Length: 66
Image 1 (tube, rainbow, N blue to C red):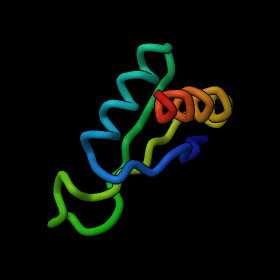
Image 2: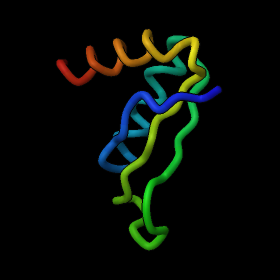
Image 3: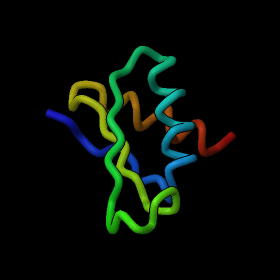
Image 4: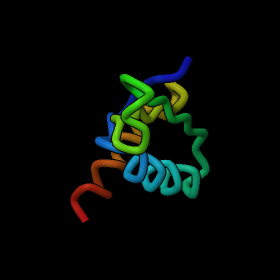
């Protein structure tokens, strides 16, 4: 089961966090939220397998602090 660990404010930030998580060996999915007409400016959910959710959340939290 996939779990949302973070909602990024736009696609660029979501892609940055996805790269960091995949570099750590995690499976990551991105899922846009809201209307398609928002395009790159739409919020994006970052999802990982439930078993990796805690570790992924810690990684994102550390990235936000840096």
